[in-house]
Length: 305
Image (cartoon, rainbow, N blue to C red; front, top):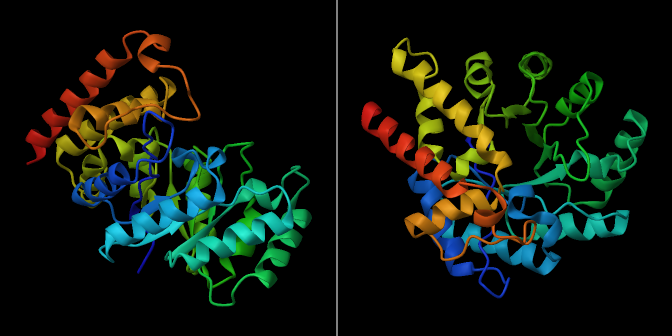
């Protein structure tokens, strides 16, 4: 299975007791697939990866894989450990779930931002400790800091046949285009994660979209991706709408996206471990803003039907 297309960074629903809601997670998995997802990314930053135990990361990934039933690929990370031994244990555990790829977080390969030599050395040490048949991906997760890959590092990773995807968090169209050129003869696919440049990145050759608003309207991103070459004015209009919606990420995400799922009945609670406060109190008129986005999304669904 190829890791590309619309790749939601999955939410983790919690109960009122702050435990993982696995029934809600199964419903959420089906919702993504029913709404155009091509691959699911379990245990990532949107999943609140830094607030999950290894046991929870394993069970979340296994639950998603079981619920997906082979319909689309599932990739997972779990790569948060500070020490080499912790990282090996995490990555081995994620491999053992049967996920289609295990995603390495770039800031864990160079935790102190020391440069290319350290990143390569840490990667090669990890690679030697992991199963030989492991399929890998890369993720420029912005927490605890955003470790963007240099052109030299992109070229280096493109030389490995088992590294198949980069979730690009450069948020810069020129960088995306350069990376596409650097990887054009490799198996490494570049998937942009920024809503503001999503449409232009798709047209430039980004193999999909893996931004946080795949938790709100992945079906609209799927339509945009499939029709990126269309000259129909509705496509550019839709691209503008999606880009503007992306700005709402600053209003208490991931709780913001979880609130939408509570409204549509996917699961029952919109709380998170990363933002313990009630976003309805912390962010003024946040629910009204979400309602506008939901109504606008439905309007575009009718327009493109």
